[in-house]
Amino acid sequence: MNYISNLMKLAVCAVLALGFLVQAQAQDKKVDGTYSWTVPGRNGGPERKMTLKLKAEGEKLTGAIVSPGRQGGDPVETKIDDGKIKGDEISFSVTREFNNNKMTSKYTGKVTAEGIKGKNTYERQGETQSRDWEAKKVTTPAK
Image 1 (cartoon, helix red, strand yellow):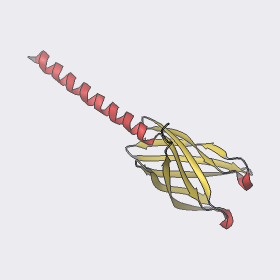
Image 2 (tube, helix red, strand yellow):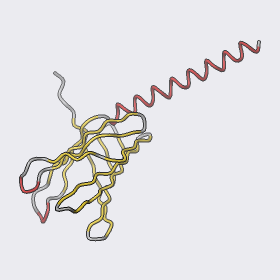
Image 3 (cartoon, one colour):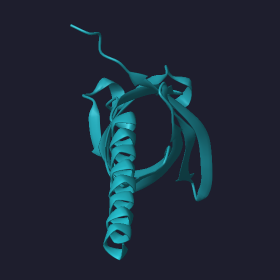
Image 4 (cartoon, one colour):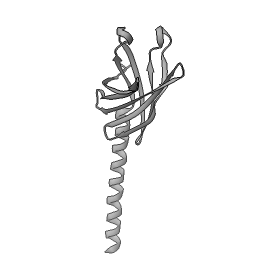
């Protein structure tokens, strides 16, 4: 009888572990993809389109942000750092360098089927500033 009880416990544990694995893989697929949004232009200029590429592996998030080049230059791709995903919450940072000055922006957000909505926090002239950001998931038409 004890053998059957232990076997049943092992079976229940295996089913639960499989369920968590399937849920984690489903979450990975939910965030994977390309997102886009616009930010105000510099000094009242036209809005700039930003693109974010994300891939989740468990609780680790990797990817890059592509932003327009300065003064009409080629787009610049910057790798994200410290990417994390827990449930539907994500966070990552992006460090850009211009004229030997580094600026780090920290992004947090909540993932939905349509996109990501959250906060972007950064320092400007010694003050911490933040703005809301909302990126729409880019879907490619079926072939």
